[in-house]
Length: 113
Length: 116
Image 1: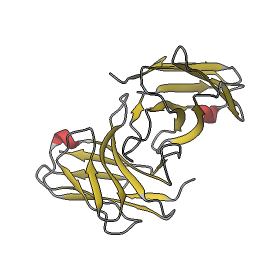
Image 2: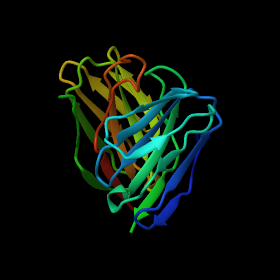
Image 3: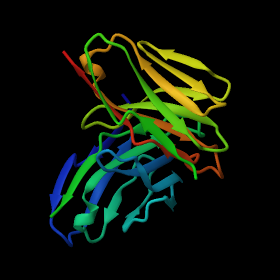
Image 4: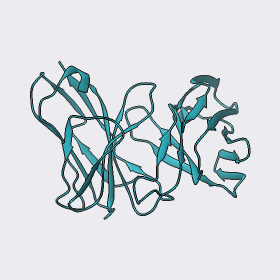
């Protein structure tokens, strides 16, 4: 199993709260990604990073932000949570170019009430 | 439009039986195709990767095939076990455009349930 960790595993929070989903990997991977996954649907890319101080928005329009101050850490922040943000959030990392597999964390299940 | 279609959406089989999952794609240009297994409550894990020149690749009881001409791939599971119950996701890479995520196109997955 890949060494990529996400916390918390589950989070229930009220509308309007600020939250940060944590993601850390110990493999020294430069490339890291955040995906959103809803039941029965494909994964959608929210943000990605090629390395320290590099962040880009993905295909899915999102009100979240990310930072990459250290290679191993790639947190995702929602400034004001809304019920539409209820979803599964998966963090992933990759060693090199496109042939390398994505290594996923076990996800954070977010529910916004 | 780049798309990855998987079928069936869900499948129930008895333990010990074989099954085949399908993946059709319209991604162009094509670089590679990867199958992931996602257990309930876990992140996806890579099973196998297929490149343009590869027709068949095995990983234990899992055998993936690729027909680049018809843009189809299949994942065959032999002698299924209860632990094979999971979602199987087909992901096609359209190449490394400018060093991004490699233009990964995800299918919606096939949910497999293996019953005793």
